[in-house]
Image (tube, rainbow, N blue to C red; front, side, top):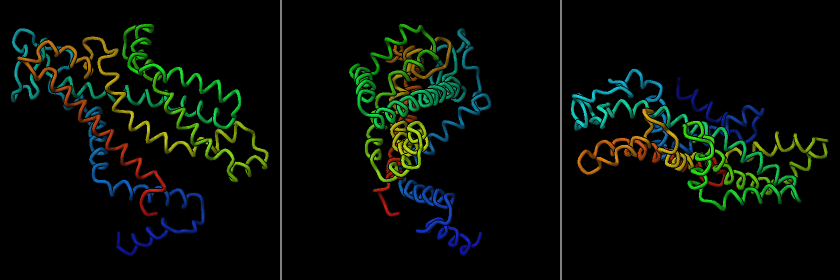
Length: 301
């Protein structure tokens, strides 16, 4: 592609008078991408998350050993070596292979929690902010009740009630994660509820349901995406060992089982701990970058 063609497309994207909605949306996306790529640490976070996705997708190809079957007789608690890069655990299982397969469960947890918690918070916050009155009071008091309890303690209570299992752990974390999203969505809704844009839509005869769904929720999504991304690290740490059952290669469960050997065979707990640290750092860096990129008040347009 020639330099002139690239310059023409750039000018088209940055036009102050877009000729269509598509051009306006692409222009906003291009500006946000330029802000994001200007942040080197955000790019590092994006690369970490992309690496996590690739590792999770190719775990079956990359893992040299089974994640659940080990050699208890000959390979128990072996130190890191060329045969076992991260060593082996107390059941003779290769830790490197278990970490690769554990990345799938990490993605499984964070994606499901985001899919469940974010829409609930978005719906509660926008409805409360737009309706006001007793609807706002009831929904926000319910939100305050959830916020009054520490998230980890409340998640443990739900797991105890629902029973062990990674699915129940995901559900418990999602139930305790939606209140901050509701608060953000309500604050965003209150800022635009009385704007000329919403008044014009009301005069056109749009129903409250349509106004909330088509005109208010899209305005709250960028703030919600930022908060969800920044919360991913906390979700991973909360889910660590919360509901995984042996022999599932979940990073938190691996750390819990490796605590007994932390003094002599440190690699059993250190390897999954470093994996959680790197992925959590990646999500935090990505969230910081998205916050700067999606904030219209930051950077040049």
